[in-house]
Image (spheres, rainbow over the protein chains, first blue to last red):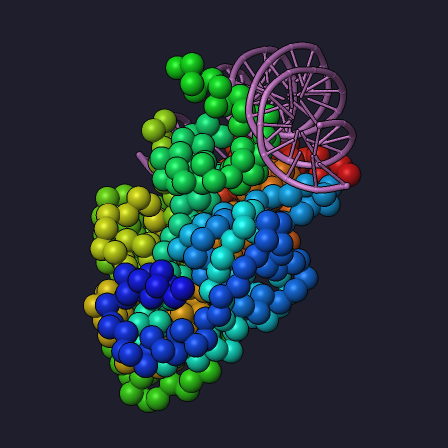
Length: 194
Length: 194
DNA sequence: AAATTCCGTTGATAAATGTCAACGGTTTAA
DNA sequence: TTAAACCGTTGACATTTATCAACGGAATTT
């Protein structure tokens, strides 16, 4: 059950996990199943868990004044989910996170998470790197959103995260790109013709 | 000369700076002046310095295939500048950073910076927090870019970073918002009328 | 002091994207 | 197994934003 998580940690740090580390992680990260459309987090709640996806797919989104959903993040196997800002500052989240497919995760509470972050060397190292990479990725996505056309952004996504296109329906992808499903549909059919 | 930096560090960490810390910082962060339009970093270079602005204003931008500049970040007094991704991975930067005004900074090399990050407690703590906050800010800006109209984004900027509007001309602000200077001009004149 | 560049604005028009409505084909749920 | 909801596509049209060109005033350089 914990194999994919352990493998992931080993892949993302230089420090070796001790046997105690492994035991501690197994005890603390508990398996949980989320049904399709089940919430992991709802707007207004504080994000209290740190969650690693073993199998499945989830999406993070906001709902605007008109009731329109804006997808801000998509996550599949071997990704972490949760609102780090809410967790860090213990403030209500502005996001909703729910399962798009039947999803299996390993999750732990914030308090246990904090313990590991300082006690297990590999853990701290890993999360610092992930945070860093996440910040870089955000910067890139922001540049894309500001300087590229919808079509260029779609091509970028196709190139960099082809998995997403297979796992999520087009209207979700469109929202993630910041365009309507109709516009995405037109971009796709025109691209095919070329 | 180093007062604003020391004050900044004290404000952004819980750990107290020892006298040795202060001495070390003073020795390592050297003063440098950048003239208007002088580059701090050019596309293709590796970002080799960690820079704190004492007085002045800088901008970070990319240049696209058509030669159009896209401003990705604006920085004034008491902000850090530099491309963290390039510094961290030692890869060529895709950004240009230059001084918009006559600018005074305190800067240190990457190697000295790395030393401080591990040796001075307050320093490590501070940068972890800054990185975190930066990631959160990016996430927000990204959401804004994807889900809001140009006018809403401008109003947001006006509310959250009014300093920018006074320090940078409109065509820079427009680029930062991902719109043309003409569109920004129209947004502004229409808003005034309301 | 004159010349030049920079800056913000405006108008006319084009291009990109959104909105609304309708349709058939799936998939999902009763 | 029937009804309902979901999904992608398409058409007509509206809205937003970009593009190109021109202008006058301010700031900067010569």
